[in-house]
Length: 458
Image (cartoon, rainbow, N blue to C red):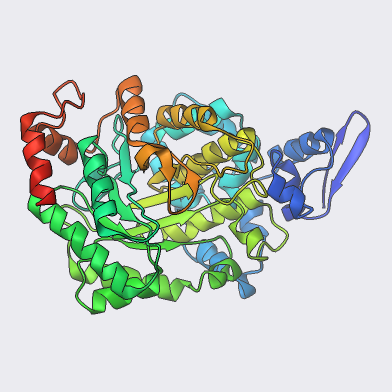
């Protein structure tokens, strides 16, 4: 039992899960689940009680029993107990202060990445304001490699997302050309297939491989099909670079996706066996989103932001190239408006980064949410200052297959120009060589780039 007094009123929280939920900033998903604080006073009381809690509490009191949940077992079995000694004496409030200290920089943060459990990351984020989340995230650097280098400080990569509602090859290729022409695609060229079957996946992979080989493009491709399809595609000789899977923070959530840790490991090992990376072996691409456990009725009475952080423990176990929080995609039932979406995107990025993950963000919203593109411009700019590894590049910012609003190729150019950020080094070198970009990092579309486009489409 935990309690705190505010203005002579004693607020009592019967469990760690209740304390964490009521300390969370307002979320429509937590309200829907009946977990959120009933008043601002109760939320402040919970945050103050949480700030006084020792970090050791999260090692002593699992939110979901070890015996009944394989994600909990993963969290505890992989915990870096040795480096935890650096911070084990701290309360959650002390931990916030430690993260914000000028003397705490990249080396110190890197050393404790695997000592930080998801619950610790979620807890400290709940007592941090937006500038705290941005500042600490900006001090982290998580670098991954496959055919290029993603996550270096001073760089911002993009996933070129050329989705099509009928998986039309010409339509997808047109979007790929448009994206490359605007300097997009260094994180991955990743297609969400409209038809989730192995034959379609192989057809799309072969098309992307043909573009890559023709152009000597230093990037990687992915068809975001279910992991079982990707394993079958690998067995049939398809040119698979990255294995994709949506993941959640509980065993029951992952079961609703048709996966478990053993299946993810099978896909991971299958991709590694191909040896397709030229400069690295990070072969996994994971996507997450606050609210997925609640939508699957698999939340165990735990708030959605803490469960999101638990999904990062699953991702961390498989050394991914990319982890992407699709922050506003699930809808207003979980993140009601722009205020909630912006806060959630920064929380997710912070929690993932301090846990050692290569975090990107799909800066997005659905058309029935209380948000618009101006709000996404705000979140995009904040994430750029926070050191986000990658964002999405969607034609016109409007995904016509998934029916939601994201960020465009030009949005990425805006962020790079405003904040002095560059593409992945190998991709930048290629853009310069092909005449698509000049040394001032401006898109110029020279004669050389026109010839390149003819090469792709011939």
